[in-house]
Image: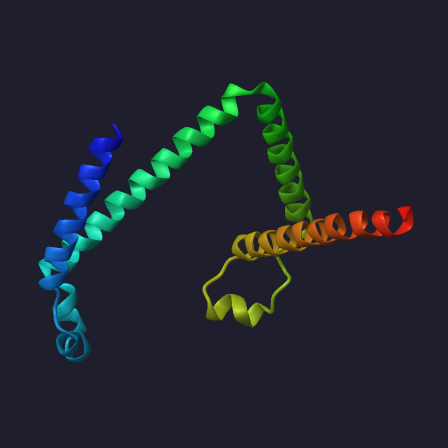
Length: 148
């Protein structure tokens, strides 16, 4: 299996090197970016990039899920973490009023009240998680200082 992966990576690397040679010059990209974007070599390189990124994401997900379900203790910890995060999001949603912004902003940006409520939810979620992270960094340090 390792040999097949190495051969595939070498082939992809060679194809990418050949495509790199056929990329548009810097002058074309500066003078006419729309024409440079239509270059088939560039489009194929983007396709290779998306393919490799997709493969990397799938492999990471498969091995993560495999390791997660192999030990019940780690699955239990993950479920508690997800439930905690969901609780923070729910609290943030109820903290956000949906009228936090100036009404002028709503008309200029075509934003509805629900959009503003979702933005507020995200901001409150970030602030709560940041506060939790700071507390989790400070408490052990204080315990060490007091304990010595």
